[in-house]
Image 1 (cartoon, rainbow, N blue to C red):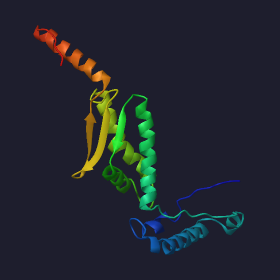
Image 2: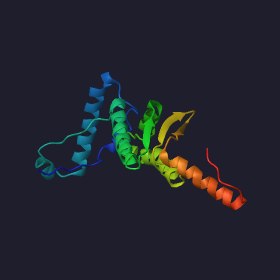
Image 3: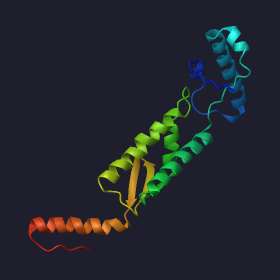
Length: 182
């Protein structure tokens, strides 16, 4: 069994309706898309090769619920990685929907979704971890409000007390006074 993938016909698909398919139009859109892809295959490959191919499967465009499922899988994987650091994450429905919008391309499908997740969520969380704004025991809530992703940290972590005490001690030692923590 040999499985081959190609982006042949993606230009024709991109020229079609942009965005998510309406359920009633999905079957018609799929048949048109499959026809365009098969025409491109015939233009690109010799008939001798195509005669040796048992089957051609054309995957339909992803629907909005399918994209949200992919976002949920990425969030689940991120949640598991953060649990190794005892950090918890909650991602709002608005943030999930925004990720599905910016991470979708009619030509490329959900491939850009991984990059969107990385740039919009993971990179920002990494910066917070490296700057000690996000510590073990914390919960970070990600939302999408007023056109931007927001990050709210619930700092109930056990390391915050130690971090506050050590910061207070550092300030006190430079100021010459006693260190106090609340």
